[in-house]
Image: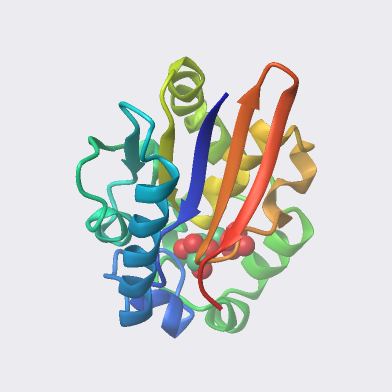
Length: 195
Ligand code: F6P
């Protein structure tokens, strides 16, 4: 069986400020996670040949991958975070205050709700299809460094979780979700590298 390791990027400047979307760098805490991740992956995949690292095109995932040397890296636009459109860069509080109808609509149906000029979870799930096909084809391990909404969708695919649960799946920062694809099905382990 070959493992697929799923992780969010290390904490970003926007995570610290509670702002969604954006393309900020990682914080000092995020940098520390990047080092711990590199250490973990180095040990975990030491004997695995041809493992690769897949990131989004956003800074915070590329920076999180940077201490991971010696592995080929691929950037996928399809791994970018859900596009929050008109709400990009806002906090949830700001959305609630300035665009209350949008806030309520999302709360009512988070799976189908599409941000103005942005995406819905269903849109994200759809654009992940080529990534999933490629992940299924890989024989070697893959480390996927991406974002909360995207990883909820990817995880749900491998863990066979129902569509309606996807927007609510717990995918915390600084935690690696290891998926093992074997003959007897899928196994999962979680490693929390930082508090
Ligand atoms: O807050 C981090 C983040 O990745 C945002 O960039 C993104 O909009 C959000 O999480 C997705 O989570 P939710 O769908 O719960 O708002």
